[in-house]
Length: 189
Image (cartoon, rainbow, N blue to C red; front, side, top):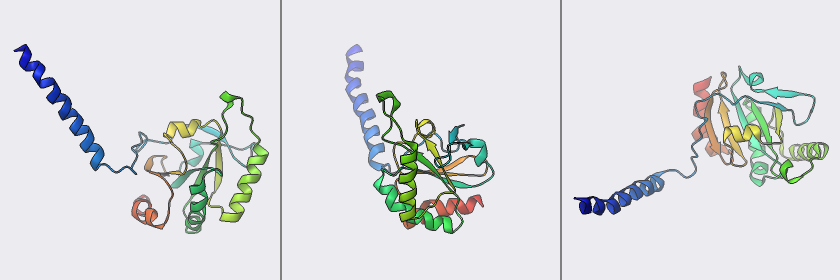
């Protein structure tokens, strides 16, 4: 009896491995599950990128449907998508920037020059177009970590109640907008 049970162990391990591999084979690698879908935006209190005296909270964003764009000047894909996002802003899409500073980590003794970053951001947005209502500076990546951000660009479509409706990793272009965001935006209006 004991030998028969031991003989089943390799089969059970093989079956579990097959289920795991099949799930990965038929899943969409571009769709990253986020634990925040359907939940409200995490609470935050962060400064404005361009006005260090101004602070933004999750409560400030309630009442409007908006697209939260995680981006940085260091991100080449962000540079490519800025003109398209600017076009969307021209069509009435409210876009909030969440500036994700990749190169700063106080744990390694890094220093940070806000004025230099502001100049860099202004220069980039003047060349590409400025899609943002405003930019939130997430220097220590607290909000990004709460959202489960893995890099930039990432986008979160948020409804009037602060509920995250859609999460997209990668750039937004015409095809992505029409396939994923435009239908959801219509549902929300």
